[in-house]
Length: 72
Image (tube, rainbow, N blue to C red; front, side):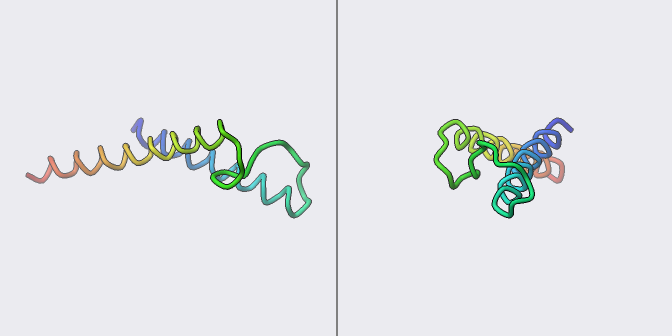
């Protein structure tokens, strides 16, 4: 259950940033200072995104291990 909350949080973090950046480019949202994830140069933004993706990957690995133990 906790893993699904982590995945949802990271996914919403990525979608909100992408939506904000697309809105700024189109001109329907005000321009803010958030960088485009994984493309723009922003040290802390790239690091937090990579940590979030790593957490999602770890949840997937733990889920696969748990499923593997259930059927042995």
